[in-house]
Length: 85
Image (cartoon, rainbow, N blue to C red; front, side):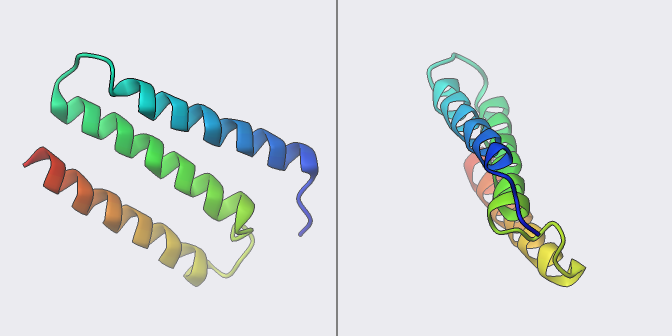
């Protein structure tokens, strides 16, 4: 499946916006748990875009896409637990 340059550029802009959002969250005074949740949420969204668009796993066999998503979820959960504790 060929992805258009316009779609890639849009995804790239989204990834940059999410990166700037997560970096900007560090300067806002908010409870630590909420901050960790919001930053990790941006990580999940970014990784989903990378998996689907740049790695082109959206149309891949469900096993490969599922393994990548499970790995991402596992890392986010472990990091979230360690940062909240």
